[in-house]
Length: 397
Image: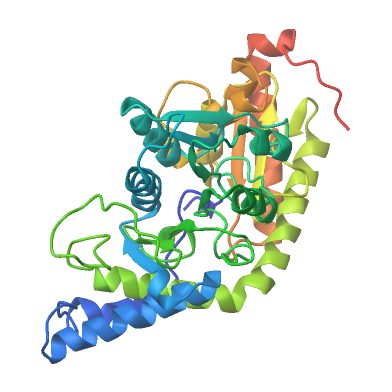
């Protein structure tokens, strides 16, 4: 049987066995509706609130500020559309500020607002994927109703200076939302310290089940709900709560808080070993994103002279699961909008590889992955017309 090595944890993570065990009773023994008054309902409601407490503790929020959703995409939509529509229009034209490297859930929400007549400013980033803070400050006007900037990028792993961004928004009197789906549970997140008004997170990125997430909503903020019905989740997200999924998210959040520091040190070591091995083993290769200000488990590479999709298939034959970028857009044929925003051309952007590690990965697996990547890239280059006269002229260090 061929070996199987999973290096695509930014797409999704395996559900932790402790999370599975926590969820199981709520499929059968404690299956009640959390809105019911009888014992079955009360058991479900108690589990719901315990999970809310665990999620709140993970990000430094209060229990009442956590709203459960179906995942990161819904949380982003509720935050951006809900908050902007609730704020209404301001003199000078309604205005939203975001970046060019956001997740599609953020970008498509912003494009929807544009279709309603709102103005959206998409800030550029530098070669390492960072937003220019002076440019951000200049972009905020009296008409701005929301700033939405991700905490960590889903493809290249760059971590934005969220405290500074939040402070700029606070000083300007503008609400600030962040998509923290990739960062929560991986690096410390404190919504109060970061001056964040709303924050999106997702269960399946932190070894919890798919189909459940949460939105932090500061204090008495009241975004306009996207779903209307029985008024669940403080009238912000109607619909009978997914108690097994929410219990799983709560347990995953609890475990992430306990293991974060140990995992972060371990994954950073594996990541740096992976980066060093590939860059030293392959000429005309480079790291996308910030070299140090990045997620501990993320390594995103570019290779001259190859197509990333062919590389993914070649690695899959060797038992390695990887990706070229975001799983949400991996089946699209056009180059990554994130890599284009870094300044890469179409050919450079297409020759990319994202490897994202998990706590179950080992040094031996990393070494095997380095060997496999070098072997497959070299084989593809031998067949590639692009490699005869490399288009990318970059001095690597």
